[in-house]
Image (tube, rainbow, N blue to C red; front, top):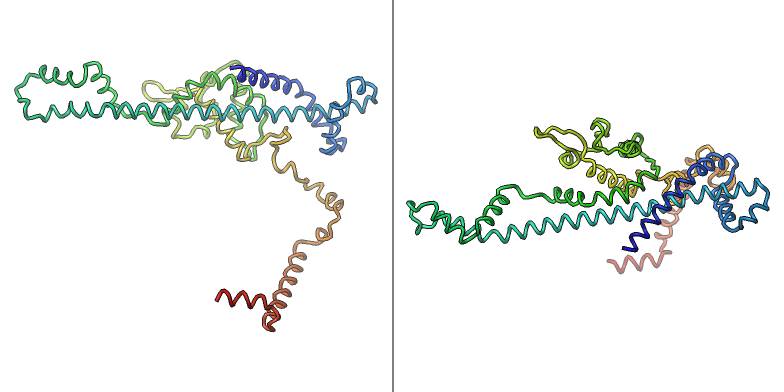
Length: 353
């Protein structure tokens, strides 16, 4: 589809430019705070790099031009990070919706098939309690009668299907994921590899698992080729181990099911990203909330600049003053109520009674 092709091309271009700007962004991230440039000025200087032509920038003072371009690299890198996050959200939702739809379709088809077989299976069972069939009747005769109800091949297939436990919705979901693995590798993997996530949880097992997966991909290896002990154990919930691991004939786990685990890891990272547990430090829209706050070291200077009177008092002093004010207001209200000055309040009480 042309739309999908263009989207994929755009995504790859953004990822390539994002990688190209990474060294400049690293320099800007370390240097600009030392220059005391506020974030508003960062965005303003970055806009000037867009506003001026190449010749204009060459005619400016060299230090001025370098500052504008450095601010532009800082801003553009973070803007591209946000674009990659949007692409990640789009592909993740698309693949999740599609896997759920495929699993539901397979489940419904299985249910319909079982319902269709039920009447014929019932007729076959009734042969065994049919009093018109003598006990001495040869089994071959009974078998031929059964084949008239259901052909031999159909009977064999139906019997095999009914003799095993129905496939669960969860198993069907992972079967659906198997059909999407190529798209997961092509669309999701480059995005998760390019983005550098952080977490509010120290030693997050999900970020540790992602870092491990990145290192494996960098070696051109599959996750299943690495020892299972390398994978953070807490990212393998007990109920999903049958789908996230591979097993030998004795039922002993032999390693990761690479495709299933990769999809599971990406899904959990995205889920925690939406909740705020995981965030993107080098971003304009998806940074941690604390980045918007003044640091404790700069708090005193920021409060002094705002010059707000009540901020110069201690919290206890403010609470004492507010409590005294509220007490005086309650006493005044009680006095006026007893003296009958609050006629509107008397009217309201009369209507309610």
